[in-house]
Image (cartoon, rainbow, N blue to C red; front, side, top):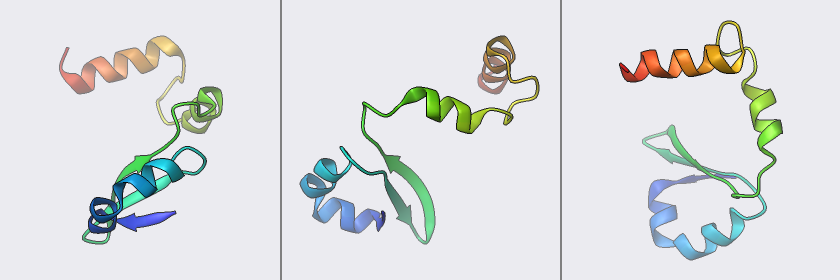
Amino acid sequence: MVITSTELKNNLGMYLEKAGYEDIIITKNGRSVARLTSPTVDKSALWKSLLGSVPGGGEMDIRKARDERLGI
């Protein structure tokens, strides 16, 4: 489901409930800015969806890329 940030502000409780069983994409000025999702989301499926987005794809490569991005 895609909603505007204003819609989220006006109906926060309803969207918090809906986020328990479906992703909610929040837009601002026509651009996606955030996603509400359930804390019980299958993290392995999320991990697999990100696979290949970092060269090498191994856990250490991902940590190194994160550290470089954060300037650590």
